[in-house]
Length: 495
Image (cartoon, rainbow, N blue to C red; front, side, top):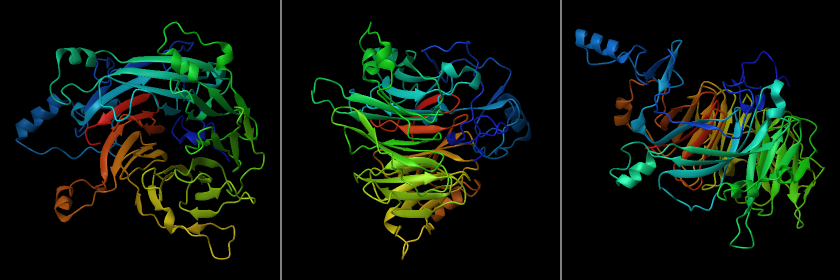
């Protein structure tokens, strides 16, 4: 594979590409504290022009004066984020009336993979300012590889938009207007992070928090498992010091001979069962023992003819998982198989399949995203083994497919409680929200006749520079966290 060509545009491809980002504007030595940037503070002091979506690129005053002079009521056209080209020096400014919450934050180095940590603050919460916990791995410049770290972070003071949800008390207004706070604990790494995932094991003592583990796939080919329980606890216990021993990996998996980007913990194995896939097309299973250690089965699952780009356990089957590959296939496996070969193999794209998401609500549905910008939904009940077997993958028909994005899909995820809502990130600098329950009737066709090539299922478009990965917050309904050049934490009024 030639996925690390120095000629490739920095950060332009999906996370699998592994290109190192250029250093961001910052002090030479990264520290543990990232910086929140409020989207609506007066932070734009450059000469770059900022325009609103739907505007033709000229300053509002100039455009409005011309329209008044010509006595025209209609604008020059519809601006479509990710499709309409900006002129040099122009950037997009979000419409604050379309968000319930919106905050941006930056870290010392780009964090192009992250995961959200479930907390003890309650489910289905809608109180502002919001608090959430995440873990992310950095991708430092090659010349500063030793600056890499696993960042355990607490975001607090995440206020709602001004005027959202009606009136509130003066005390609530004061709290909601407070600046967001980012706290972080840094675990040193000697290699960049390709992907990181979190797993929690419930404590047998109800008064104690769960054990929180992370699995970090690194460029070094090693997979590192850390126990970040003390790091999370330290945020709420002032004066707590993290010892060097607590920041060391509790396990280092050395089974892979090439680096990888596919990793997933099983939600159905509380102790901890981990899948990891690499660029050689090999998949390994690592299981936590009763004694708290980890054992990796050295017999890999084989079948893909190219790199394994993403992997996910079934949300309902203890032994079943799906994998996506740059060979254009999705394959379904059973860890009980003695042959270590896939039970089902389906060719779903002529390009790399970068990401998959298995619906947790309608568990026969699987979403996928590919290099050609198409994302699709598949009904696994329609996937059948080929008569007589054989190693050649079968062909599958999608339940729904969308080619709205014109660059590679870098992340896709089902809403945790609404089985018709899907979030998608793409290399065209956008995060899009989709409602698969929407159908276009004749009346709606008339209303959208002037907007070409925009599916009616498209709910929302959020601008995210170099969008790479996104996750719904499982305990704050409708809240999304996405990462690229920086983090975005937002909730729209449409979801």
